[in-house]
Image 1 (cartoon, rainbow, N blue to C red):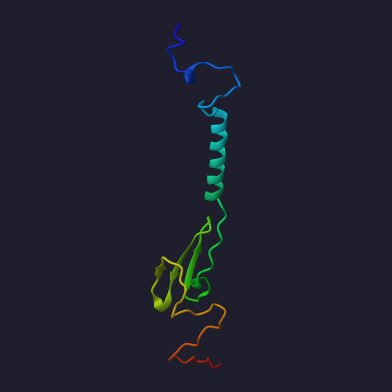
Image 2: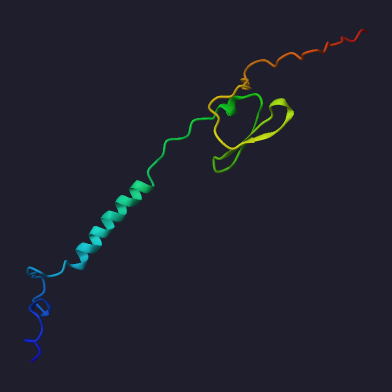
Length: 115
C-alpha cells in the first residue's frame, strides 16, 4: 500500500542490479578507502636518506655520546669549557682533526731526569 508513496530510488530492487541514481556499493567504497590508506602509509613511512656526520664527529675537542636509537649528544671542550652543541656544525674555526699528532705544549720545557 505504501509502495506508491515512496520515491522510486528508495524502493527495493532485485539483488545485483543497479540503476542510474543508485548509491555506490559499500564494497567499492571500502576498496577505495584501503587503496588511499595504503598510499598514505607508503608516503609517510618512506625511507629517508641518512644524515651526514657533523664536523664535530672528527674533531679532537669534541666529546660525543652515542645513544642506542642512533642519536648523539656532542659537547665541545675547546679552551677548557664544555659547551653542548645543539646543532650539526658545518664549519668551525677551532676544528682540529683527531688524526693529527697532538701539538707540543707552548711555554713549557720538558726536563729530562739525570741518573
